[in-house]
Image 1 (cartoon, helix red, strand yellow):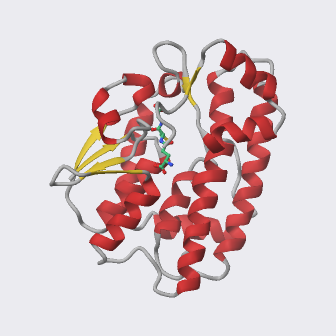
Image 2: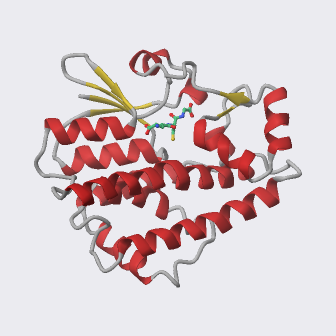
Length: 256
Ligand SMILES: N[C@@H](CCC(=O)N[C@@H](CS)C(=O)NCC(=O)O)C(=O)O
């Protein structure tokens, strides 16, 4: 298999950890369409987003949730999906909370970093940090007394670790979240998670300016669904309008 991936993408990281946890071999290929415009990713995913998986027979799959579902069905052992139907549904809910809400809220923070000179930058950064702290409290509650979110290690944990690990970079203390702190320690003992951490540290060591990770050669930033909903919901509509009218927004080439 071939995986189009990007070291800092939470979606690509989730899929890579699932592949590694299952002991599957694959060739990772680094891509970011807004930065490199390489057409091979577009061939595998009409939205030109990572992750995209090319199977050994050439068939393709895109979207991290769909890819993880496929991996679970095609390679069920070791499992990353609880057998209990309710826990399985919870797993999907927590994955969605991470992929949709945590991602959109933290994206707001990085957008503010990348557009530091915008008049809204400080307010966006503040709103993002406050809302992310609330989401982290929600995850703290979702852990309950369990070692993992849904009994045993599942896709929910892999989705969550990609976002929870951003708290420190955003200056958010986990002091009042003892369950989340203990869970992070448990997660970092898992080899597939260690591999992810190693790759992330290596990639971040090369990043001197967040703009180089987010802003394409023509000054455009990738936007889509929930990432766009967040600044509009938080009232940063003038910021969005300015970016749009200045041609600084890049949307997925094809909506489906
Ligand atoms: N729903 C998709 C979202 C994937 C996504 O948004 N990927 C981002 C990276 S985090 C991307 O490829 N953006 C295109 C770009 O920046 O050019 C999934 O779960 O895989």
